[in-house]
Image (tube, rainbow, N blue to C red; front, side, top):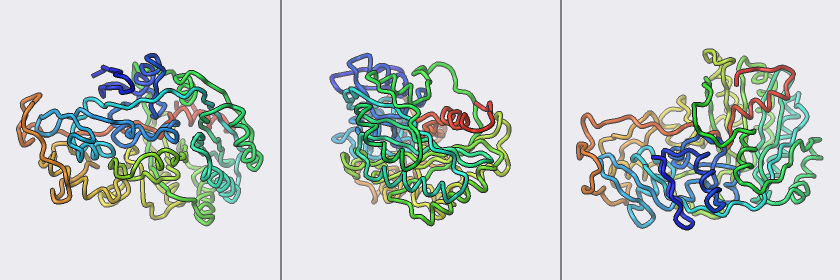
Length: 436
């Protein structure tokens, strides 16, 4: 399952490949690229299925937006080719909720010419020691990026200690270093910040390495173990001052003093994600997202997760948004109720997804704790799955011993490698932890 074939601009990628392998192959075979995350060991299967955000997404869409076809094994053992013209409703469901419908064995992506010039940057902001100061700083950030050109991908990345909250603005600018500095100089001055790094690259693979804080695009061997809990939040417009103040107070007065390593980040969506692709083209529900947050906590030295750790991360979210409307499904949150994850992950697409599930997997072969439930076929418009061209000999109905539990790839970290970022943020703190 490691084959990659480039036919013109289209790349057929078997799902045993990881992002580092795909990026390296495409660059070495014509300087092609895709908009995806920068952790090289993340698998292409789950990353694509639930969206697939990366630093190039504001220019070129989510990774799923580059999918023009998929080979998938269905619950009845049939292998089919899906596209906008072949099993279009199944194709729609795969791009946003894929693991509930079958085993994708290959994606066909429409690749792009790699950016000619890219800048990787990091901007440090003086430590925030009060909730008011943090709220004011975040307000300046969100106001700036709300109207930023699509060439800018800028994340608000932060962690805390007993002294306060440390913040970096990190990301990419797809253009020249001089254009980047001209664009951000006003924000840097307003935040009393400093540009630590603004390095210009012409090699696409090297800017991916820079985004991964030096991690090479090598996929051999396991990643270090990590005991963690994470939540996500999708927002669609500017956050109000009252919410930011409440959030800042919690971060400074409570979270910063908690007995866990934690990290949070707001990633900027928009750009091509919302303007270049129709919302009806995929089952991904958050096409019009503005910021997507992750709140991530891990135990010290891989010890058992602290008893209060989950509560700390939960309140990190609810202090900002007491009644969250949306979350990112590539960040599995096991604490959400069925009604919560169905609404927050899939929104208004849930009914249609459950109808397509009834057509293609009526016996719920592909099930896991947050898989799409079998609904009414009246909610679907897909044709019935085929009965020929079997690649194995399962029960035609998908019943009995062929029942399996399928779990999506939940390794994606919003386009960057979170442990690496935690190390970078912790380097700003007056103490050192060797968790990673």
